[in-house]
Image 1 (cartoon, rainbow, N blue to C red):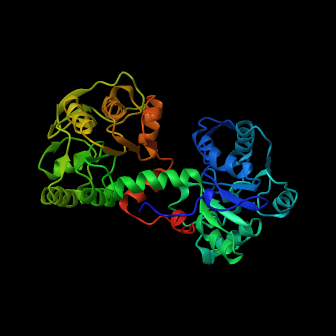
Image 2: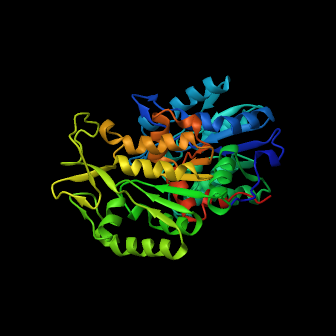
Image 3: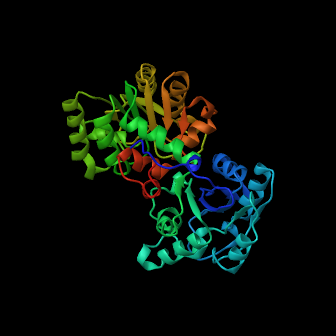
Length: 411
């Protein structure tokens, strides 16, 4: 899976119109960007192309646009912040059709080194549709604006959308290059090497609420890693499958046989599968979620009282999990160990983050909630790589082909 794809270093972009699919799906509050991580992550690729004298046309989606264009999901705020970061004006095209007359005119007027940002690709309404449902027409119009294409949106790389993978067909028809940007290259390198060619011992840590979300990941990682650590809400289905009493904890009764199979598979393959031995339990899920006065007890994970719900790994488990990480050479972590938004229930997630920060192993955080937790706890700069894509990194860890990656030209 460490794929040999063309990057922005592999073609001459001078004077060329280069369409770059970025991931500017940033959180907005009252029109202001509250986390600019994704904008900062896109800068190296954009700066490289600007420096090479390309005409750089940026596109991205933002939000889950349901009822057509709306000011609250415009990319105007992104253009403003991007201009500040690049130290040059980014020309934002307020064209709800995305590729309409305004966009065509803006691109036609570009000089070498100029940067244009198109409007939210989902305003078009055909971004997410199957190619035969006019997504292909939108992809063609995007390609008509450019000579070459660069995908640097790992967070969307698992989706076969018009601006992610379909556009490459039309760029190729005009003999253009389809490459990946520096961010995509980094994601492929770290996640690909971790799964396909890890330095051992390789420890994988999976958390989060539901077993169902991680079925294929557990199955795939068991064949790749040396130790698989399970935490979060999904652990209680495993504990129940072993015959433990889990009280009111989150359990997926339809996945009990699957959990038994995975435990048998680990044993057969000689892999360690670590489950929590103690748990922090409460009378119910915290409401509000960040209630600092939540009353908790620590109980054995296989003997949770009927009126209690397990919400974080306990102190003994934290120590075992931290020790498992100490001897590792490669660690991949996806999903928190408990309800980490709550200060009383964050200790398990904090313990894992601290263990990863203290190791000299290659540490890879698989996007989503674990990425947010690591950043919020101030451990971000201690990790080898924090993935920018939650769903995409999960599918990568499952061993799936990601459309946005596979659509790029091979070297």
